[in-house]
Amino acid sequence: WAHMNQQFGVPYESIPKSSVPGYDERIPSVLVMMKRKLIENNGRDQVGIFRLAPDRDDCDFVKDQINSGTFEHVDDVNVIANLIKVWFRDMPSGLLNTIDDETIYKI
Image (cartoon, rainbow, N blue to C red):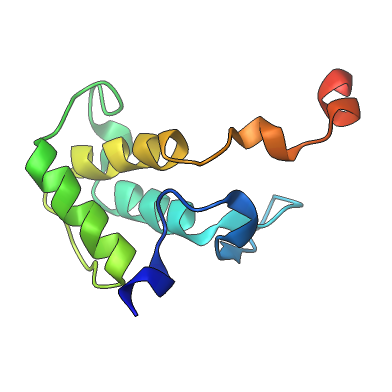
C-alpha cells in the first residue's frame, strides 16, 4: 500500500493537489506541505537555503517518509529545500510539457 502515497516521480496529472488562495490552479499537495515546513522552520531566513546541499542520507530518509505517508518532522530545513528541487527533478515529464504549445507561445 505504500506506493499509493507516492509523491516523487509521479506524473503531474496523477498527484494529489490542493487549492491555495491566490492561485487559479490547484497546487501539488506535497509542495504545499514542504513550503509550510520550510516556513515553519525559518527557511526563508536561512542564507543559501536552495544552494546548500544537505546530507544525502537525510534527504533519502525524509523522501522515503513522504512517499510512504509517514513524514512528520525534519530538523534540517535544507533537507526540505532540497526535496522541493528534487520533486521537480523527479517529474517523469517536464512541468511545461503539460501546457499546450499555444499557451506556451503566449507567455
